[in-house]
Length: 74
Picture 1 (cartoon, one colour):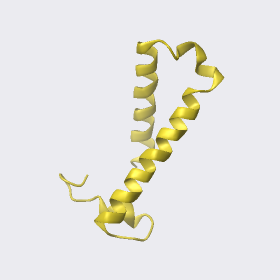
Picture 2 (picture 1 turned 180 degrees about the horizontal axis):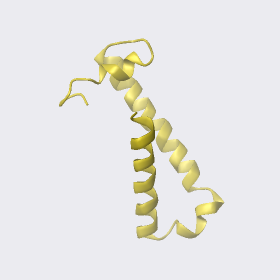
Picture 3 (picture 1 turned 90 degrees about the horizontal axis):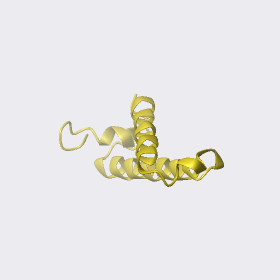
C-alpha cells in the first residue's frame, strides 16, 4: 500500500489522523489484534484435532488470511 500506491496514510485517516506515521502505526496495530484473535481461535477446543497437522494448520491460516483480506480490506 505504501510503496506501490502511496496510500498508507488512508489507514490513519480512518482514525482522523492523515499521516504516514499514523497509517503505519494503525496498520501494525490491526495486524497485532488480528493475530491475537487468530491465536485465540486456533487454541480453542474446536480446532484441537488440527493443531499438530501441518497441512491443516496451513489451510486454517490461509482461510483466515483470505477472510481478513475480503472482509477488512473493503
